[in-house]
Amino acid sequence: MKDAYARSSFGWKPVEKQAELFHELSRFIVVRNTPEVSSTSVPATIVAYSMFRFEVEERKDVVYCYEVQVHQQSRRSGLGGCLMKQLVSIGKRWKMQMIMLTVFKCRLCVLMLQAVNSGLSTANVAARSLYNALGFEVDPTSPEYPDSGEEGSEWSDEEREEYDYEILSLPID
Image (cartoon, rainbow, N blue to C red; front, side, top):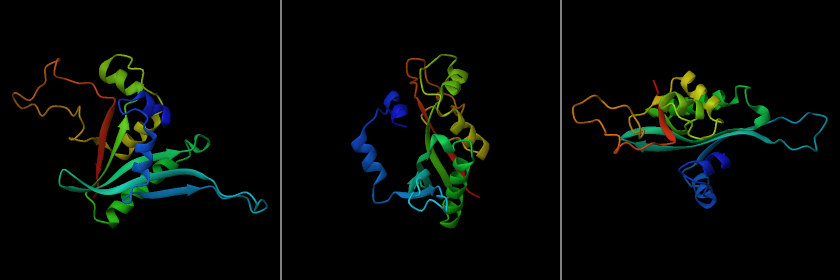
């Protein structure tokens, strides 16, 4: 993720990232591999995690997912989906209204939306696909949320800014 942040409008700011991760309101779900019984000297290693917080966004109680990380060797194994489903379960248990997250736009998404090569990471293609499959949609608080169609609500080309991220949300039933 360091590379993705470094190439983004957020930039890589390790001190701020550490403060975000270890904030007193941060909560984690951690997935460790199970070492073989015969190799008791090998400690369990972290293969995936999610960092989240309980927050209020636009007067709604939400589980805000700050991070979902899956070790490269464990990707495509369902761990990312499992972590996201656990966040939904936690949200239901604590009577939250939705799950929210911020995702970097992937090159494929940017190409589809803007028909230009933005130079952004393609690493989030699988993550964005997962979020779509789980039912996440662009949230109205996302900076490039489609206009409501009301008269006077459209931006001119000069006013419109391009963003390299989106805010997604999933209502919790």
